[in-house]
Image: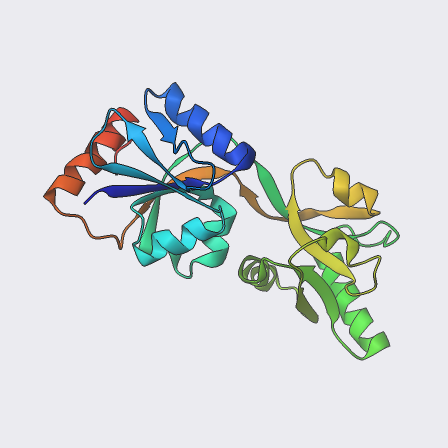
Length: 232
């Protein structure tokens, strides 16, 4: 058996992950087949590379089906209930930066803070008879954040794509979404609340606390972490 290292299956996140490991003296190798989502860690026996979508990696870590995984800190916190019980954040990797933020229409000139949003939500419910809608796919993170900040009289509506367009399409009054530069928000006439950053995300290396390990696998895991100069 081998320990399994899950990394993003495509795109810039995969490229950056390969570069990050290589800069630390650990070479990752993709399968020569474009259709095969697998690979290897060169120079360290007993390690299998598993290529998964970034969204799948938190689930596989939590279930103990992979031992190590590279994914966004936002995805682990959103998709893994009580995530600290099932995995450990070993190190931040310095790429894949994006902020989960709350944004409202630019025309809401008197709404710049969470307190303003809370007041606007109360007015909205009184005027329209239903709660102000916030479109997002990050239900857990957004709900916990707004509850901690005392914002009420809102409802979350699910949006799995083109979230910035929901306000224009009249399916939501505000949004909570990931942004790197803010350009897409501005293009859709939205502004971030000044205190509306929910989570500053980046790629991180996680260790599963639920994956089983025999003595050989433990040795392989320790070799990887030693090569990366990381202590579990």
